[in-house]
Image (cartoon, rainbow over all chains, first blue to last red):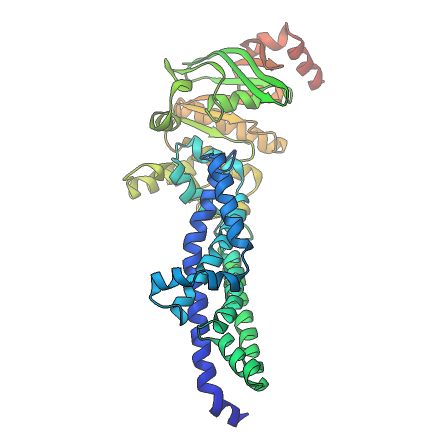
Length: 222
Length: 246
């Protein structure tokens, strides 16, 4: 065990940091974009606060198309785009591009669902008080769905954590990359098992933290 | 004075239309408590939604001191809405905000509001509705009657001249109902605010309203002083309500 750690410890530690870097920044960026998309989907739907049925239908279709693309194909498909933005298609920062593109539509649908939980009556009450559409979005829709959005955040984090294993196999570092190189290409299963254990621990920790935060954030269960 | 003139609301449905309100005309004097009563499905809720401009009337006007709400849009309408408070049947409070934050909500919609003035106003309103000790509580921790008080305080925050109440007591027990009606009377007397109560409960109208309009099938069946209308009912709708009372 001590020998294993002295031999691979530094490698695994570095890979864990790379994985966390990709996971957190991709989730953060995907949430910024995805929440905006989710708000757009919610307010433009028929009966929403700014109904635009045609836009809603087209935008919903685009989101679905992006979501239907298998992630590994998306990574290859986006290589020219990634190069244009980051300058290279190799490495963790480059991996953020396909991760964000894949996760944003996913976040959009999750956010849409969270926002839809808000009682129509509360939105009408705000309108009756003279709130503008923007005020309704920022002070009712989003603030009232914070607990639900936080719960969604953990789901997205863990999904993206899984995706980083794929970017690890296509040019970025991280635990997926280690597992692929050592476990698959070199038959060093011990290293692969170690990455699996680390990933399991990460999922447990992320889920635990977010369960705690969302419980604290929700003022309905007091 | 609030004048509803020839208000008609038509909803399109598959293969036709539904006339939810049909040529409704009413006059409510400033400073009075006015009751609008009717059975379920009579058009009461649609009338309230038209008064608060949540629905645009298909025809007719809603005049508040001579200006037509139904013709307003955008900023003008938002401004007019701040002179009118609405208390909803389901309270419609923000569940993730404290009682004080809920009451402050309409005040903070204004650009460049004064934080100290808002806090002072919230305290004043909490005092008025008797919830001074609940400022930091969340709606989930309150009883139905307490939630309704928060809703009333919130509706009064911007000093409206008109308070619209949609079935304000239908979810409350008799004791809480009595307390709620006393509060509405109190507010009407102290602040001089005009109150319109929409209800299906005859006892509510008898208790606090001076004038009443009976709604049935989307029309005003009769209107007048409460005593006159229910001593000598002329319409079937009024007689039906009296019969329901037993």
